[in-house]
Image 1 (cartoon, helix red, strand yellow):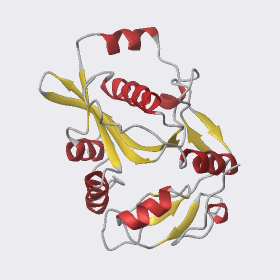
Image 2: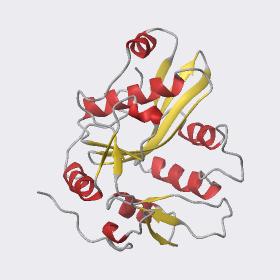
Image 3: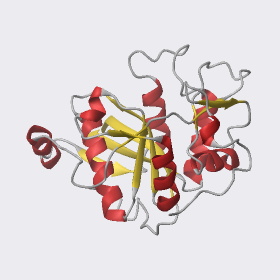
Image 4: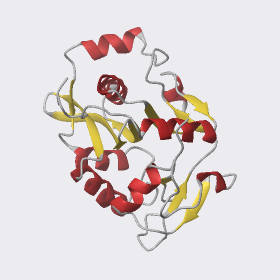
Amino acid sequence: MAHLPPSKFFPPAESADVHGILGVGGRLSPEWLIDAYSHGIFPWPWDPDPREPVPWFSPDPRAILPLDDRFHVSRRLERTCRSSRFTVTFDHAFGRVMRECAQQPGRGADQTWITTAMLTAYTRMHELGLAHSVEVWEGEKLVGGAYGVALAGFFAAESKFHSRRDASKVALVALVRRLRDCGYELLDVQMTTPHLEQFGAIEISRDEYLERLAEALRANVRPITEDETL
C-alpha cells in the first residue's frame, strides 16, 4: 500500500476540522498548489478580496468519479456526444474556460471562489503543463467546458460551465474518456452534487482517498493533450 510523504507546507490532511478546513494562509503559487494537491488538499477562497488569506481544505468524506464501468452516461447524453452538434477540444482556451466558470449564474464578482488570484495561479499551472481544460464548441462559439489539475495519474476537477444545454455534461464525458485512455487512476470531484451523482460519483473516506491518491501519483500516464481534438 502506497503512502504519501510529509507535506512541505501543510499539516497532515487528517488534522482538518469537521468542516474540512486544514488551515488559512500560505500562497497560491505552483509550489504550494502542487504540494497541496499531492496531499489531498485544495484551496477554496471564500472572499474575492486579494488581501484575505487563502483557506485550504481536505474534507471527509471525499467525492470521486469512478473511471471504470461505474461511470454512467444516459442514452440521451450519449446520442448528444456522438452527434455533430458539439466539437470538443483540450487546452485550446484554458483562460477562457476559467473565466466562464467564474461567471456562471449565482457566481457574481462578490461570490465566486474563482478569484483573480486563482485565475493567475491556475493559469501558471497550465503554462507548466499541470492544469488542463476541456472545451465544448458550437461552431466557433465556446459554450461549455471544465478545468482541473493533473499530477501523474491523478486529476482534480475544479469547475465547469455551460451556456448551452448539455455542454458541460459533454465536457465531463469527454474528460472522463480521455483520462481513461491516458491511464489515469483517480478523478477527484471534491464533493458530490445531484449533477455528479447521475454520472456515478461516490463518496469515500479521506483515509481511502489518500491511499488512492498515493497510488495514482505513482502511475505513468500519457499526456492529456497528445491528441487534442475529439
